[in-house]
Image (cartoon, rainbow, N blue to C red; front, side):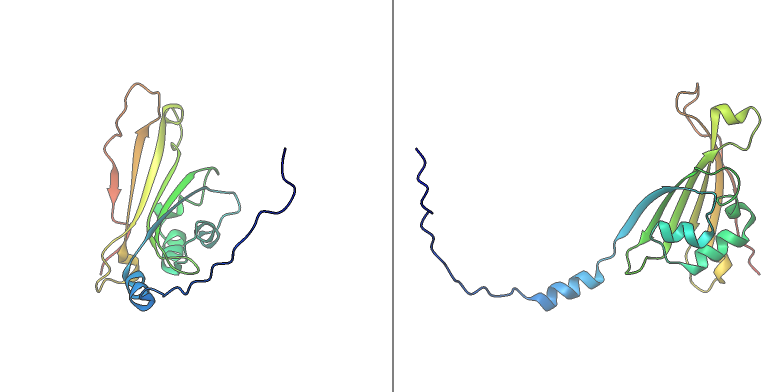
Length: 163
């Protein structure tokens, strides 16, 4: 049979010392974290709305997505392209480091067995003008389950003009 009376309790109070919080905060400030996020493109996407949804706050990247011919294809065409980004960790969204977009092949016979991968990568900044800080490439790849498992050689070009 259960005893309905409350169990005896005892209050224990002990002072706790904080362990070097300032040194821990300094160590955290120097620690950088790269965040990975995924989403699908939508028909109503703009460069800013896509980046915002993926937790990226980078006006330079948004401008590049709008102005570059190859990068602009990420936002145009069929919806539902898989977008994967790697960005810096920062309050309000970090700077874009890399974007990989996978979508259907351009058309024709390729559409059934291939997909297109577009990679947008930030290059070393140094003294380059903003448009020169990006590298963009596309690859035509075999779809899973197709007879060949490797990507065809990528069609690569610099997505910037250096003066």
